[in-house]
Image (cartoon, rainbow, N blue to C red; front, side):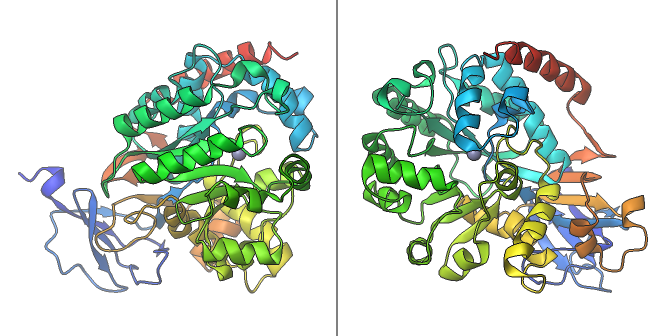
Length: 456
Ligand code: ZN
């Protein structure tokens, strides 16, 4: 009998398929092991001989969604009363007093809960930006690797950093910052230990100083050098609010993008969370440098930060990926809902004819893959990894729809029926196959209560 890894499996006749590249796969997809080996056109049967098939009728199939920016630990501080209804800087200043009490068990559990939320909403590749390293949490990224292995999704984990505490004019309390030597040494250790350069990579590492207002210029420059030396990607928050422009002008005598360029970050290796407050000349420079943008519509609306100029950035040459951002500024980690938020928000700026369901789904798949520097995920294409989300159309919200792809976005799909990563079914019948969801949920609630009891 053929084992699963050598069998040709036909994911047969979905209700609709979004491939992210206009190829016809209406008849389904044939996979072998972790790889797509054939797309079956409308009304056709596979040319490859088939060992098994899985009936996918009543399911809308997309490439696994890819989240490009998150802070998993923030799932423990959703809707904390003292942080509600505040813009970014006072919101951050308040929450740092809570986050400085984070411990290893909290980070492990928060990573699993956020990962699970993302997977249930169609995500097969997650990115996290962890930058809070209080005493006792020095191995935070190692903890996240362990937590995600159990879930089975792919991940780009960014080694975040903060070196500019309140006593030096930064925003975070001094107890969560680290020395620059320690940050750089740990970054190198994590790359050596976990960074997988293969097309099939489950874990990749990127380097990610938190923002221009929480690290020194030297650390920004040294991090860029270390990333170049190791050929890994660079990530940070940039141009999220107008206040950030004021801060940069006051502290560095230049706007955030000029500062970024002065630190040798303006190139293809870099992706930026938010990317809202750029002027037209800056957008041109970003595009020419092929910088990636993690577009975070819910967070930007919740904190009233602004609207990312996605189409202008795309036309200039940037890759646009989608992201839910941290769960203290969203406050959920639902990726397919984020696709809907992008459509609604971006239509206000660019109009209904320009911002289509296909365009925003592309941000969450093909665009996000490009942002993370991944070449074999984010599309349904021969030779690509078998990472797929399947959404059932057999729900009240979809009753009566004409176009199932548009419906996925505008009718508000929120959970997958099935999810496959690298040819393995991880979610079936709306539940993760390998973990006890209720246990993680209960543990997470207990730990959130403990952390929030530390509110000043
Ligand atoms: Zn963020």
